[in-house]
Image (tube, rainbow, N blue to C red; front, side):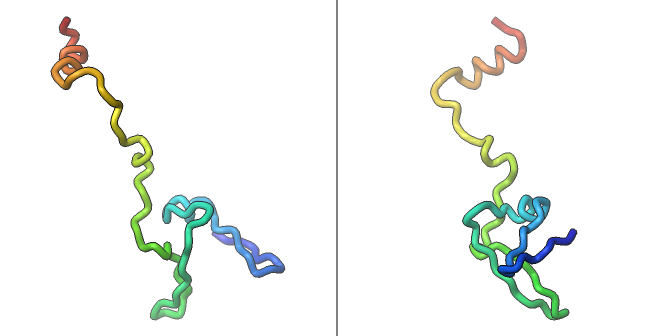
Length: 77
C-alpha cells in the first residue's frame, strides 16, 4: 500500500490499516522509529482495537428466559 503526501504534509492512512488498528476520526496515533530505522504507526491509547463484533454485544432487555428460548429453538410448545 502507498499513499501520497499532500503539500501540508498530510497522508491518508489506507482503510485496511485503519480497520486493523481500529483508527477512527479523532483517534490519536504515535509514530516511532524501530531498531531497523523504520517508522511504525500505532494507536496512542495502546488499547486493543475493539472486535468487529463488539458493537453487536449487548443486552436485549427483559424478555424470555433461557428455558423459554431453548424450548422455542427445539420446537417445543
